[in-house]
Length: 191
Image 1 (cartoon, rainbow, N blue to C red):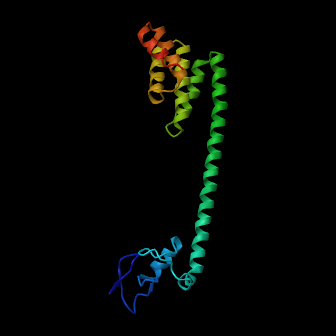
Image 2: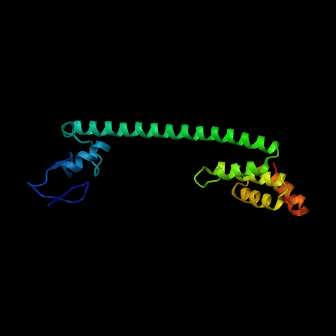
Image 3: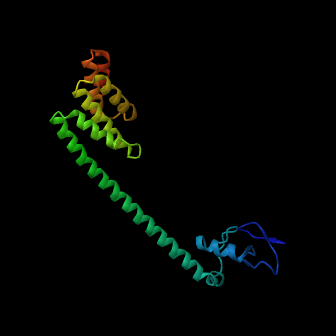
């Protein structure tokens, strides 16, 4: 009994249909049909299948190619929608940060912190989480809560070592508590 070169199962004469390549390698018709969607050459010897064999499956191959193209187009559109959603989210967050900066300038620290708490969610992108941590640390520094500022800013710089403003305010908070060596460590990391 011959075996299919694609699925490696037996080909039962009279029950399973088979098709062979120019070198006589057998394959189930259904296996060959799927194989031809990906390659027009025999999977074993790499010889091209005759045009007559390929012609038998042309309609199926074309249908699969069209479905593949539709799927690719759908994925591209979904990626574009996700990209637009990310851009929209970033623009919205920038407007939000602008409103927080206004509250900071007006020394409305408690209100600014309460608004930041509403946005502090693990489902938001990591960059936004880090920006929120920075703003919370900065606000706590400005309102004289250096312990909270250090806690938030240290968590920030631990996650993102290249956040110079985080190190700046961390250094200021350490300095305000009289921890000069730690303040110096933080200031050295401001670029």
